[in-house]
Length: 110
Image (cartoon, rainbow, N blue to C red; front, side):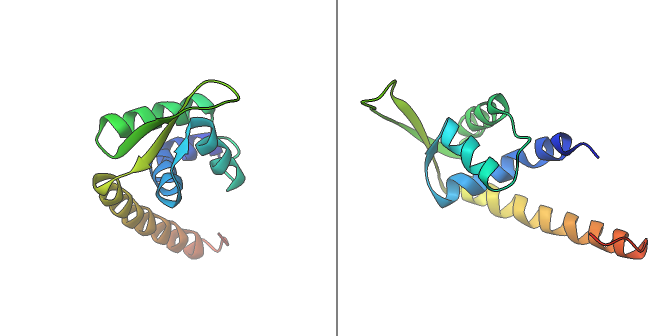
């Protein structure tokens, strides 16, 4: 199974979870996702997801000056984003429970 397709399907949830733990700028979010084990996640996909979640009202943003290069745009989660995170986490939990049941019924360990 192609892991990149799975990541695309849950990227909103993963980004919301990362930003919920601590505000971050684009590459910082990419790095934290990769450190968590989502090695296939692409930079452009994460940047696009951050912009889309911001446009949807789930994230706030602010600019922090940098002495070492260009200013960084940080993203933080807001009440709408927390609601989205909770809703998507419940959906994910139900999906994984269903898949675990199917795999157990087929005699395959997950």
